Length: 331
Ligand code: PMV
Image (cartoon, rainbow, N blue to C red; front, side, top):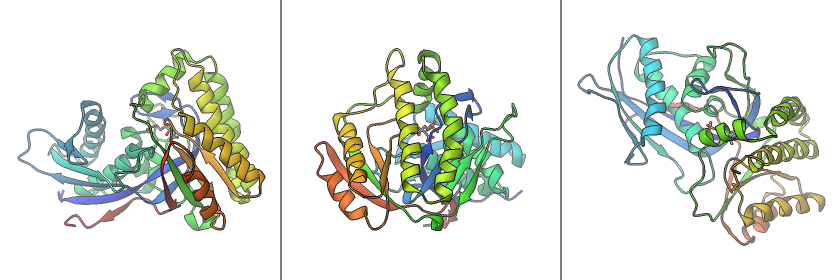
């Protein structure tokens, strides 16, 4: 087995129908399928260097040592790679988010997809896309989807060991070249992590069972809207799905309130612009920022309107992009 230093980039992804509920918390197996798109440029670069003289794995994120919750997740991925490769050599891992200012975008999905690709290469494995997606998933569930570019669907699977729980590409980015606007909300508060939030919702929300049932209906409807490049239909499903997830969180005791006033202002602005003829729709993850999908033609006026809303710190403009890839490890 050849050990080498390897580096990979993986994109952030944004769910159109959300993953919010696990059937297995250790393997990150979801209760429902989910659909997402990957972002161009915004993501994580992760370098893995196996070193026989290390007594323990070393992990650095954005130039700081990783916290203990993060370390546990990274170690899970590295241990699985070592098990597959038949190695007990420890590694140094360094990960940077390519756009540090992109708050409101889940960085764990891109970081773990990049880690899965870099670590498997570093330990001499040549994994296919389903295997890479499964490996990324054990670090962070949504990372299963960041392996792919364009639009991806993560099947929940039924197997207890998670072998059938991985993401597949539905279409490449060229299928529907929408523009993506990330409306970042000024918000000093520390948010509840997705891991803790999901668990609280599952045990403390009277809406949780209905939420999972809604996802089962929304996933095929979302796929149909994407297939037909139908923005009206997409808006109905995607906005409805995000709002249903937040309704589930809001009804949790104690409640999970991720929104700020600017979050609600963006919701109203997007609905108003659509009524006035613009092609756009919004989605919101477990945070206060809002991601808006829009046509190339409408992206400039939509971005301008969003940036004028009080409490919006910045509107990042990007596109739907490519999947995880190896990059030069010396760069
Ligand atoms: O993979 P996690 O544990 O970061 O969870 C992601 C949860 C959401 O971003 C809210 C939804 C999703 O499907 O990405």
